[in-house]
Length: 170
Image (tube, rainbow, N blue to C red; front, side):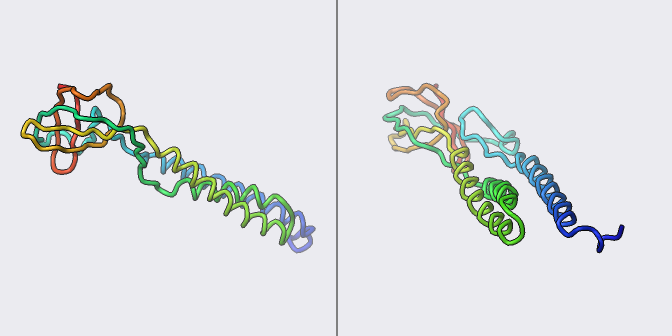
């Protein structure tokens, strides 16, 4: 039987199923690839490879105050893309023809919005803003992940180059 003699609904169903599977496969592949772009730690105990073997300045001081903050890492857009793809696939199964197309568009938009919200929440980490009086008398503030039990009055050392500084108990 030739393609022109196949019932129209069967061809459309086969093509739409194939397109959905291809889209889903592409989505899963993209998520695996983009997972390598995971956000980086702002912990005082974590160094990236490019930061090793570089001379850094060491200063000393005393913590004056600590304030809880939220660190919002940069979004990569993965949530919007993934949510849009999943929503579009789910929405396209709502109906046939035009209603399926409308469902796909609405699903993609709503999925993209939901994906963005999920990504933003996943990119948040608890942090602290630490105000330090350096031994030189200068007052500075540093924000880092809240992974140490520091308190006002603690003697600390600050290690860093340029704008990147890590603070730890002396």
